Image (cartoon, rainbow, N blue to C red; front, side, top):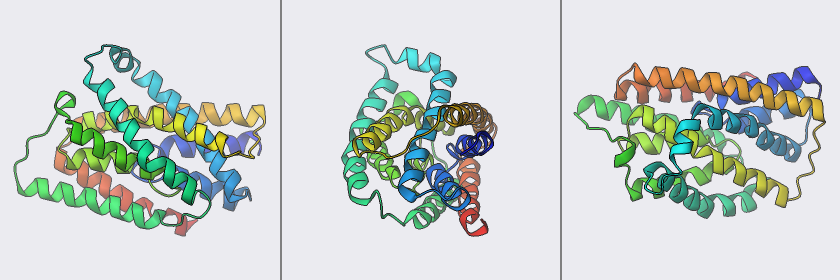
Length: 256
């Protein structure tokens, strides 16, 4: 892998990480079809790419993260509960299906359809939405359980978590913020699992640094665009738009 290839892979990760389509699936596909990497190596490299977008979250929401140090922080409780329940589904699925999962396209189609259905239902009835402080323990548990499934290649973490939060009535900007922030412990856990599984991947220092920088910059920019978009459209149209993007992006592997 040379520096230019690393730059492209990092940009692909940064753009797709926050869209309701699997960034892991897209980057793995690119590495296997473009670079000729083995699937296990491509998965490990894809997990490594998440480090850059994780750093983008830490920088973008640094004030929110510092506020979590307050023992009464609802965001801190949400992160802890969601992370614990992510492990309940994520760890067993990773161990069982790491090398043979192929259901990503179907999962993405389901996520897109659910987002559109949620938006249409909200168009037909008046629905109050919850802010960060109104998120319940049940919301946190469902969020964590759903996020655990995203350890599988092809299943969108952002799409899964965003769908759960929106269907539970959380405001779109808060739903995006929570989805972004709970990715941090999820990424750290995925990296730890990959290391424990004896990841054979060895990335040279220059391509590795380029991938991290590229995914960080594009990931930060994509987050900013999505947050601005969420504040300027209605809740229902936000759901419908994200669902349509999901279904459209499902066709990408077939095009490539």
